[in-house]
Amino acid sequence: MDWMKRKSLVAATLASAIAVLAVACGSDPNSGPAASDDSLDTTPGASEPMGSIGIPEPDGSAPAGIVVGEPVGVVSYLDLVDALESRGVESAASDMVFPPTYFAVDGRSIVVGGNQDSQVPAIVFEFEDVATRLAAQATIDLKAGVIGELSLGVFDRVVFFGSGNLILMYTGDDAETIDLLSSILGQPLDARSDSDVADPSVTIRKLVDAPIESVDLVIMESDPVQITVEIVARLSNGCQEPGGVVSHNAGNIFGLTVSNSVPALDGIACTDDLRVYEESVLIGSRNVGEEFRPGVIYTLVVNDVVIEFTTNGVQDEKVSLSGYDALMLALTRQGVTPHATGEIVSGVLGVEAGIIKLGDADIQVHEFKTAALPVGMASGVSSDGGALKLPDGSTVSVRWIGPPHFFLIDNVIALYIGEDATVLSALLGVAGESFAGSPIDAAKPSLEPTKSPGDEPVPFPIPTQRAPIESVEIAFLESFPVQHMLQIMAGLENSCIEPYGSEAVLTTGADGINVVKVEVTNVVSPLGMACDEMYRIYEENINLGSDFEIGSEWDVFVNGELETSFTAQ
Image 1 (cartoon, rainbow, N blue to C red):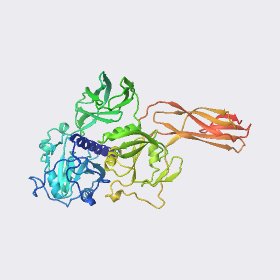
Image 2 (image 1 turned 90 degrees about the vertical axis):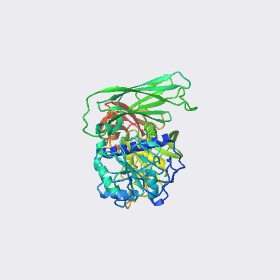
Image 3 (image 1 turned 120 degrees about the vertical axis):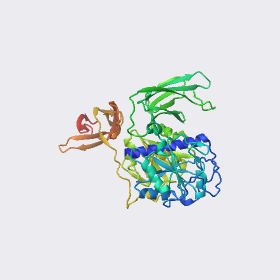
Image 4 (image 1 turned 180 degrees about the vertical axis):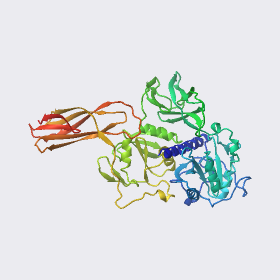
């Protein structure tokens, strides 16, 4: 499971890098050839390309030094998937689609091998024919580190292969993987040899989130108000170097990702040299209507530090980002611009859902109190999304107005109904994959949900445990007839545990004693989750109703213990 998470994170990083380049270069969405063979169209739904670069017209001859042949008949993406899987790569195909950036066609992720610690996916660009691919291939200049006018500087290492209608871009440095790709696609277009890499600890590197020592705001007395974020970050050893800061803004949320550049290879010897460094970042905008406004509470997220502030200064340094806001920020890291609508709908999963707008598309955000609750809810959604098991045990069938797609992201279940490729690509970049709903890539029948007779959602397995009980009291409401109310104070044993609910049953024991049996339960935190030892108290009120014989005696058992008795009124 950890390996799969790493693979998803690497794919998400590649997606972020390509999306950032697409935005930075201001490509023309209406120029450049696009794939026209419908049978090879792997992009969900029909959408205009987000960007392209100019490609010279082919002259019919192969550029010097480029291998044109197809060693094992690899012409299409699916051919390459079959070739890789026949060589032992497990589940080579991927659903992640990247917008056109380096070339005038979408890129699509593919898993090409590597060991579990260095596994890096590649990106495949599929053209309508070999001539178009050769023309695009001619724009690659690895000595200059560019494709056309676009820099490849965002990647520490990149290797290109060409075969059939495909250009494959591999950003890893695993020698066995490069050999595998060479045996399938021919020699790489990259002319550099391993001997060019004198010191792998220097040249083969990756970015990781930097530990944050402190975050301070400098609010300038200007019109409009300008705010600078002063950050002190830590380098944990002599091999680490500052890796820069990337800004991701989503409405009133300002996200800054501070990175360290570290060796990508294991086993590199590093000195024990603990250092700190400073980064200064100006946030906000001078555009009319986008300035900081007095009285508005903004959120600043610097790696794992979350701060609320106004134009008067910091309001709270110990806040947590809601699931809704965290998803907003995560989407911006995919190169898209989400908008918080403030709209709340009833939702289909037993909780209200907020709406995030992405272009014309609506993403329903069902936010739960803990990460355990959405995991349980997800297990109650049928594979095709057509049946849902709700927390009360009931099952509902849903006929969607478009293809549904369910995504599980921490304590959020996001639901998107539609086929927009940009929306799906962004959600896949955040969540890694969808857990239920319509297949995202219609060209891959293996993704179709396997249904059996009477296929229904599995039970709703939310892990719970009995809550510790602090006190139990009975209250008689001034009504007619009199309502009998139990007032229970229960405990939460750490920061990850949340209330789940309560249930009361009135019965008469074999000895004729009237008994009220109450169960008060909490949601258990998932295994392995780091939780603060913070004991909290909450109140649970249970209305027992008025259907009592006046003067009858009742014993109240809560979680198996006799807590109190009362005489009915």
